[in-house]
Length: 129
Length: 502
Image (cartoon, rainbow over all chains, first blue to last red; front, top):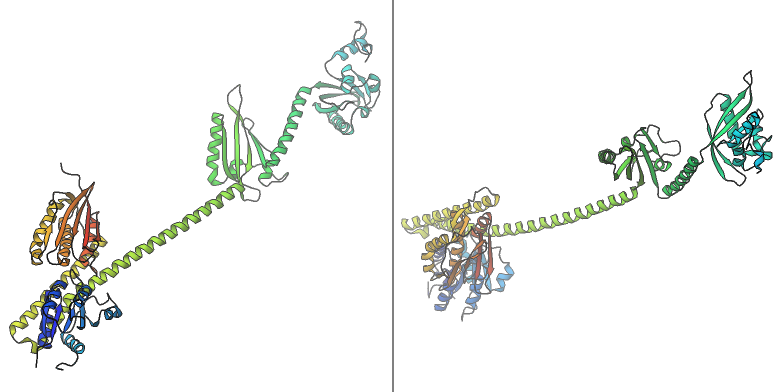
């Protein structure tokens, strides 16, 4: 593997899922993962370093996933970062609404780790170019 | 008239003169008729009665004095007398001017030795006064009859002493009986509708005993077997000598048309009422259905989130376990199993909680209501959550402190509800925010306000909130949630207060 690893910013309030998604993405996908427990932390982490992909939960305490996404898009360089939602509340929004926020994929919880990695790879496209 | 024509004086040995004297001074008409009904003797009273002179009367046939109808009546009277019936008969006689005179005529045959009638002696007792009264009555009756016919009223008279009842033709006509069709054994009370008879009987009995009037409406069976509504106004006629009721009399009028209108009006009112009630019930049902649908949607959404999250962890952990490559060490495998176990337990708690909502909603779970201090309860919950608040860099603001407020509630259930509100506020608030918790007392209500600086109204459903709401409502309170105009969310938990402990 040449160059820096692809960086993923994961926003999730559930501690178990924070762990499991981190292990999945690191071990199965070979990605570099940073985890935020809520929208405020996500903003801090994104300002420190821009991620290559945002993996967002929709039901977040304080600022929900959509509000977090809106705030993240305001950060310089974050406008084009691909976004994937991983949510248990898959029926709260329609596909069209998600697409309007530049959301590339909405994955339901529960998820299969192998399929999660495959979906993110699809969104990120061929690596190493 | 010449006074000399009449017996005004006579000597004691003049039998004829004495007879004339007696006859002319008798206060009644005296006449003798021969077998051919020619008038052979008449007294002064007779001439005056007919307004004629003796010449115009004596020797003349009775037919010259009577009109044809009265003559036929007189011939029938003679036939009765011949048969031995000497009862007096009432005559209406007209004089030349057409004035009617009412007289009672007693007639006695003058028989020869063989028993053959050779003449008739007739005398009258002048019952003009009685007759005038009866004529007046008759005329009054006639007028009344017209009046009653015009207003379709009938009259009935019950003679209590004689046990007889009299009903006018109008009364009979009201019941649909033509002339001669009225049953001779007509029983008034027997003809009343079963539902109306008792009340009418009571009214009549009261009138008899108290000598009063009564006014009742009832249905009565008619000639065709159907019932007709009548209004009866009656009164007792009291004998002033004894003070007891001797007769009852009254009028009846047909009120069927009015009753029909009333009945239709009632039907129409009932229909309008039923329609309105039906619409209201339907609207209520619709409202209730919509509310239930909303609750169901919220619960399904809440279940989606709260069941899927731990399930996601369990499935991810187990799949990673199966992916031997990811494991590395035995220690990692154990940590995955522990994660799965912890989330399975969490899942079990969520399921329990969900069932709790159901049980409380159904009233299966008893929520006890005992006196407790809401202030102390809230303070305990805040103390329990202090560590979590510190982790989020949050501060609790309790205004002037949480004083003692007595309410009725279930300590454990209420603690659960309050803890949910406060935990939610902690979860939602951004770092550094303030969570305001205070209790206000208004009259017989105590309200716990929990306000946060998180999103105005968080999206998604909240199973814990549903549970809290069910608990609070079971305790006779309410749990509301409002936005704070962009500054966060505010929850109001209101409970009935116990009388302040002084």
